[in-house]
Length: 307
Image 1: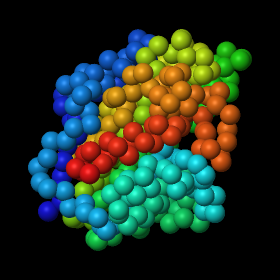
Image 2: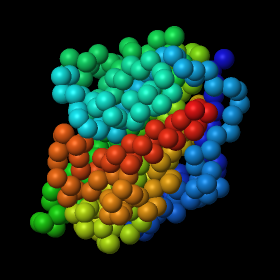
Image 3: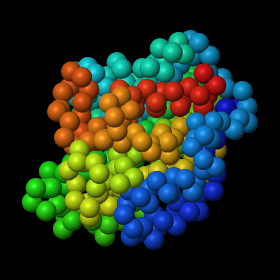
């Protein structure tokens, strides 16, 4: 039987209520309080409630799926246009636990790119998942709701007053409403392809800090910061909901993000802001995980599976 575990899947109602009601307060503040309402505190976010022994042993097959939040890091491999790095969090896990890694995560991926559609010359990511897999991690959903695309667009429009006319909750709500069913379909497909694997859903680190007004690295107006924070809340809530309903592991850096935003001291930030100098050789991409963020994501997965 699969090693189904649950990490921080406590009361979800508060998070879902805030998301469904639109959370009209400052998005970043709502994000932090929402995260707190879904857990018994940050000390439990990386802990595991285990229902069976993990079948992840040295030499086991590990398949990593997802978007750029799984793939990013220095230096990226551009041969298949996925910007996949040998220092991304899946590679760190594989090296630490001595696993055989098939990393098919890819920049720009959506749930459709995992399930059914090709991404450039790359087949659907699910084709890499076989019955021999012992561990499958997945970080997905942000591109389904235009999370990062919205952050990029609004930051670019900061000097001209922001982008609320074209990026707002009214326009994005239909995408958000579809996300839970898309994540559920993804988990079901993974389980069907690898029925004995431990499945870990790894959330996106929070990119909007508690008080965005104190973080010039964002380059977002207050209204735009609220919208981007709401998208992050929505992604987090959908991930928690699906992990709970499907009985899988949730490795959740989002809920631990306080003090690790884009303007945190050097070495403590888990995500870059908008003002970072883009450098593929160092893995510096706006609104994406830093080296510390990738390390945290890897650590949470390892803790969740008992590594």
